[in-house]
Length: 295
Image (cartoon, rainbow, N blue to C red; front, side, top):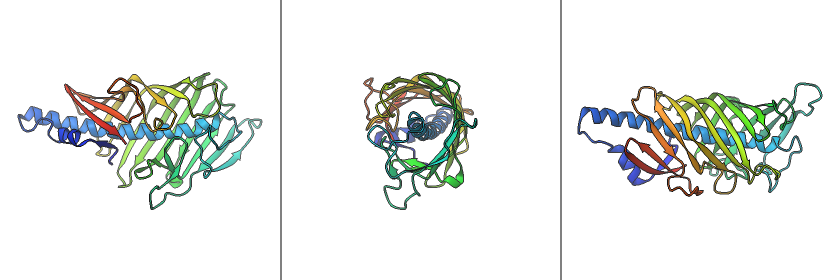
């Protein structure tokens, strides 16, 4: 599952981390490689599940007044279907969004306003008006829905449930359950955890475009090689929903640690301290630092 694109020097650095100087250094190198695999899988899982949240958040902000246009990320080619349109009956509303089947030629999905390509179906239920404190939203995708997200070339199938609870006017809690990400080579990683997402800009304008979010949280997963790991956001992640930025984070630090490893890896999404929308990040392993491009 090739989830991050490392530069040539970075890839070389990973392959030759410590050479064969000693058995201890060789063992450390193996654990570092395991941590890197887990970090790659976490980055893809977090990025693509965040993209599924963005779709539901964009629609739910309109409280049922669905719009496709400049202020939203929902493209005109997506098919929106109401299943339950009324809050009055006491069981909330329900809808689905169909981005069409995964294509065999690139781009393999439908281009959305946030720069991501999507295919397949997402299902959403909303218990009450979206801005009401206590409202619960469920975003789900099963295997039969064939929901994919990616850059149009590298597409990842997502399965699982996001339970989203409104805890404040500009704050929600997201619990990811049974998250599963499968790449085009049929390699699978699993992902779960709890995040707090706070909107820090853009609340006064319609749609999600132009919004900025701060994300904290922690959880666990199993990487594509079967290694269990934990993840924690140690410095809040910042996401800006605008062209060139929405595919990943522009600031923040996460810590990844394989259960079997004796040390962790940190990923800094703002290695140059400028918050640029350049998809550049830095892996920190002990005293080593590796600059790479997030795919």
